[in-house]
Amino acid sequence: VTKPKDLVEETAKLLKDYAIVGWYQGRMEFGPRALGNRSILANPTKAEMKDIINQKVKFRENFRPFAPMVPLEFVSEYFETAGETPFMLNVVQVVPGKRKIIPAVTHVDDTARVQTVKPEQNALIYQLLHAMKKLNGVPVLLNTSFNIRGDTIVRTPQDALHCFLTTGMNALAIGPYLLIKKA
Image (cartoon, rainbow, N blue to C red):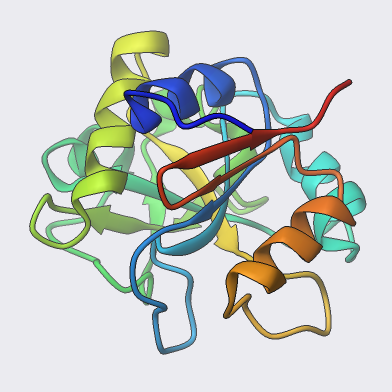
């Protein structure tokens, strides 16, 4: 357990190296999607991340897809959409040249249920996406709800710790703290 000076930068380094990170920040969201306050995050540039998360974290069928999050200013580089989709409600085509770059969030029909992020919407996630762009050139993260199959999204810090400790997540960013499991 550490309290890094720059939680975003340290988390981005873990994500760059394909760690699966529980992200518990700010107020809980209400609605059908995890939008960055109660999320499980991963680097979407390796196709097998989808299967790893489904098998070792979510404990669900391997065909189940995951959604990408991207800063609004980069959405048209990766997704064929004309505007904002802050609530992950629209399915759009992944730009053909980007499908192999973000395979873990590209569905079998070459679509994705994208979430755009602006700084005023979620400043930490926005910073994290930009940190990823600096580290690996890709301002996109795989985002799924912070829960396992059959459970509600984590509500309390205790829920977050339990989910982290009983799944294949590698790290947990909770408030200003970063917990990392030893290999």
